[in-house]
Image 1 (cartoon, one colour):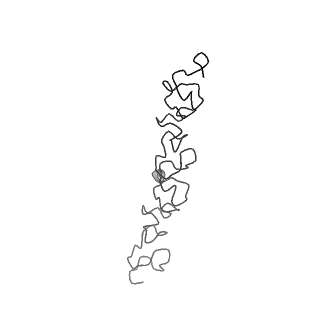
Image 2 (spheres, helix red, strand yellow):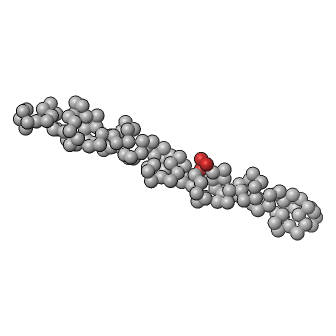
Image 3 (cartoon, rainbow, N blue to C red):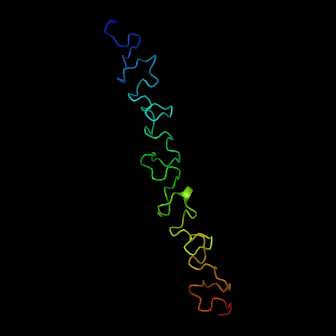
Length: 134
C-alpha cells in the first residue's frame, strides 16, 4: 500500500485487528475491541474478556455467567446462597434447628439442644429427652 493511501504508513501489519488504530497507538494490536473489560489484558489473550475480575474465584467460570463470582465451589449445597453469604456453606437447610451448628456438622440436626440429656439420642427421637437413663 502506498504511503498516500496507507492509513498506517509506519505499521507493517496495517492495523491487523481492523480497529482503525495503528500499532504505535494501539495498546492491543490483535484485539479489535482494545481490552473491552478494561482489565489490562487484551481480548485476544484474556480468558474472560467480559470479566474485569478475570474469574476472581478461579472456578473457570467468568463473571457474566458465574452465579457466585467469589465462591469457587459455586453454592456447594445448592441453597441459592453463595459461600461468602452462606452461614452454613455445606448445609442446604442452613442450620434448620437454629442451634448455631450447621447440619453437616450437627450430630442432632433437628434438635436445637443437641441431645440435652447426653444419652446419644437426639431430642426429636428421644421419648424422654431430659432423662439420661430413658
